Image (cartoon, rainbow, N blue to C red; front, side, top):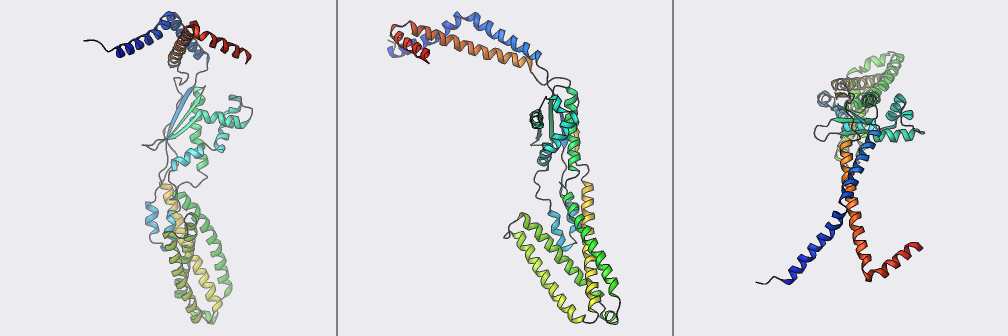
Length: 387
């Protein structure tokens, strides 16, 4: 049985191709062995000259927002109950804390505290910020949600101190910001409570200055005024809730429309109560109107005070803003440079480069030895000389 001549020719071409590659490699075997080894030893020696880098690591547990106590406390407060969701738009508190630690405020404090301008030999503060940013890595665990801070530095002690300083600066800056849902509610109702307290004091002084007349005594405003005051307080609370919702939602959103409907109903009831009070309290009108204003401010103050206390309780339940799981300790081993990896990688890369150089040189010389390529090579050399 005769072999296929086409297959024999293909096999021969493959064999000659492999031989063409193997021959120059075998002829320069010493170069291919000594060159990479020498390059690897040089790279290894350079790693001993480079200052070692140490990595310190600390792990934090970001605070978890709690709303259960607020929801139960707000259930009995009518229109104000919707304000419990003021901070619900916060999706990932951990990402907020990462942004805070990467802010210029925290970075500048760390630069000044550790004198990093001198350490990094930076002429401008912006250069020191960039250098610090490259040496600090802050990440959020996808599964556990923990915050991890890693700091690289040539000094193991400074690396650990810098990592722990990030935690302290985070506590410092977050203490003055309303980040959690309870904090936001506490700050909001604290301002409302202060304003209402001032208005209540003014209303009380006005009531005392009005005096008691015979017409005021006949009006018996207490029962009507208390109902009117509560109704007006609920209308004010509904207005506040509607304003808050419009900051983040469109006017056609179901939440906004529902709040608008509640406010319209309260305003209608309030107008009806005002008309009935005007008819029934024609005598002693000045005293009655001031008494109603006083009861309104008193009721509103009571609602805001209860909300403020509920927010304070929730804020206290949240505990410390930043809880450290693993504090940064002084690293015992360097993280960079990795001497063995650097030496092996340099050896392999040098081997590939030398092998390529040897093969290209071999085929170049073989092409130059062929007569049909001599004229082309002459033209190439002349073109290179002219350029």
